[in-house]
Every structure is written in structure tokens, then in C-alpha cells.
Image (cartoon, rainbow, N blue to C red):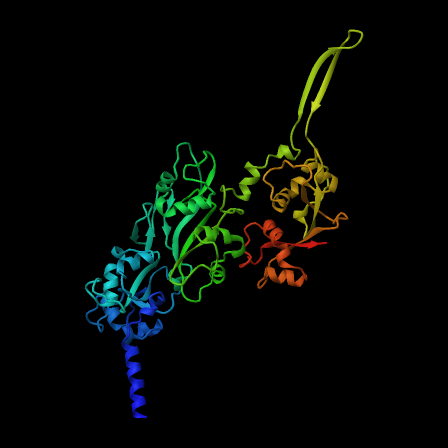
Length: 499
């Protein structure tokens, strides 16, 4: 028995002495450093207790980071960087990651991987680890890496990192490294916004003007904008381009966050945390990350997550066109039947030689009838399919079906994905109506006010309808509504396919 116990003890000791190299890709946020202003009567022990940490565990770190020589002589009013397990409402902090070094690791490369630089946090890194040199670590050693968050790290227009509370130059707003999931150290990697190509532009020059390196984003830019090559730019066309800052005039863009994947992360959970509609933005996520599958992401790797901001709805693919600007630029209302027409007057003679004035009117104008149905003022309506006949216009179709084109225009555009009001004979368009018009197959649409706890899936369960069958029309009708985070008090249109 003694021999067995001796062998077991030897195994335990060997395991304890083995370097934890297996944990190289299992970094985790050990704690945060946030500022605390000393109050009269405070001690380091009581401060730590209030922040949920044990003073004995962090005493050396606290002294090193703050240059404290005598912990019994705290000066009221002085600010200290103190460890804490929870972040609270602070706007400036460091997330301190624990990393087990493997052969080939360098502190500089590790910090770059986390989105900061050695120059920015060198002193703090030394203090946290109690060393005077960052080149003396050995494989198997556990080290602490401080990653700036909140307003500590601000990307300037040149892409450098500075310490402070943020600033702006001219009309450009600096890209503060905002952390949405502070426990994972996420921060803003870049922005995506549209750029109208000018004659003589090159992708490299556009990137340089926007404060990013073209070589870093080349593959993403080409794929995102469906460009066959970097010389395939078309003057006047809009392209989605990365930038380190945002001009104050930009109203529609994506904020792209950088997240270091840890064991247990799933794309579904990450998108939920950020309020990203995974179904809607799968293609964009895959494009940004040069992936072909949402299951191809691995712990220890970085993933970029796009969060839509502003506007009335857009998809970052092809040209950068929003739903709001589409109606203005791509949809010529003359093609829908709106217009003044042309009147031609000529003078000729009849059989007896008398002068005759002939007036000829050539017009595509269709006058909208009064009192037609307004779906936007109704809590329920129907989307009824109509097969377009030769020469028909949208206004003419709406008149015939008793629907107001001018009032229902936005619904018609969304439901049919229209890029132009010019209709081709034989195609089908869905028109909002007050009844199903006797159609065998149509959508019944309910406009609901979102209540706390509502879910899109729940709406369809209550209606005993198939969510997947109706998803495309649901998505088309509701623009930018995030189905994973419904805005309480807002309106949502729930289409249900009948027939």
C-alpha cells in the first residue's frame, strides 16, 4: 500500500511541475484594473473587499502598479489602479488576461494579437508580472497581459494608439475602443461605411485616406464589393470600405468588433450578445472573416463581428445602397405611372382646305384614385400577388386592386425587393390590400406593437405558422429590426403565408 501511495504522490508532483503548455490557447480574463479615488479612512484591504478581491492575493501587484512604498500611508484624493472582478459602469479600464507561454511566444506579438502594442503597456506589463525585462520569460510560464479598454485606447486618424479620453480632429470622430463584452476584451477593430468612387481612385489610395492599410483588408474589400480585381473600380459607384474613423456626416455604417474566441464560444451566442441577426448577416460575417462556414472558427482565433448602425436598412454586399436612398436614386417614379406626359399641337388642313388644329397627348400618367386603401394605417392587411400584364404600371395595378400606391410605396418596394418601378410582363408583384381579393395564395400581415418578452418565433408559434416559410418576407418587410433583440414599444410586421 505504501508503495502505491508513493507512486501516486510522484505522479501528482510530476503533474504539478509540468508546464501548462496545453493552455496556450486558453487565455482568460483574470481580472480588471480600474481607477479608484482614495477616501479618508480607506485601506488597501477595505478597497479590495469592496471590489470583490482579496488584498493578500493582489498586494504585490497593487504596490508595483501604483508605486506604493508604504501601504499604511494612503493619501485621500489620490487615484489608484485597483483590481476588481466586475467592471461596473467605469469608462476606462484594463482587462488583464492570463496567458501560458509556449515556445516561440513573445510578449510583443501577444499584445499585438490582442489589439494593443508593447509600447502602450510595457511598463504596466512589467509591473503586473514583477519583472524588469519582458524577454526573460520561459515557455510554460504564466504571464499577465493588460489590454486597454473603454476610453484608455483611442485610435487616431493615423491609426496610432494614444492614452487619454478621446479626441476629434476636424470633422472626423475618433474610433474609441469601446468594449461591448468587457469580460472578453472586445474592442472596435474598424468601421465599414460606403465610399463613392471618384475618377482616378485606387483601392490603396482610398484605404490610405481612411486610415487603414490596404494590404490588411484587400481580400475582404474585393469579396465584400464583388470586385473581380483591384482595378475593376467604376467611377460613381458606392463601395463598402473599412476606415479607422468616422466622418460626422456618415449616418449608415457598421461598427466591426474584434473578439478573441475562447472555449465554449459559439457564433450564435456572440451574435446574440451583440444584437446581431445571425441569419441576416451570415454572409457578411463570413466575408469579413474569410470563412465559408460558421463552424470554422476556433478558440484562440480572432473573429470580426459587424454591428449595424443608423439608416433604414442595408446589406453590405455589392454596392452600398440603403433602403432609404434606393427609393430616391434607383426607383424612377415615372416608370410607376407618375409624370406630366407630353402634349403636341399641330396645324393642318381639312379636305376643303380649311385650317385645323390637332392636339395629341402622349402620356404614361395614371391618376391615383381617391380613397384607396392605406396599409400603413392598418393593424392588419394582405399582400396579394398580381401577375403583370404588358404595359401595366404600378399605379394602374394599385388602382385596379383598390390600393394606394403613394401611401403604400415603402411596403411595395420592401415586399417585392424592387430596384426599379419598371415592371416586366409575366412577373409577380405583391400589393397591400384590405382583403385577400379572392387569391388562392397570399400573405396575411399583422402589425404588432412589441411587448417585453416578445420573440419573433413566439409570434409564429401563437399563430401556428411556420417561421422558416415566412422568414424572407418577414425580413424584407422589417428592414433593420434585430430579431434577436426586439425594441420594446416598436412596431413589427408579421407576414403569414396562406394557401
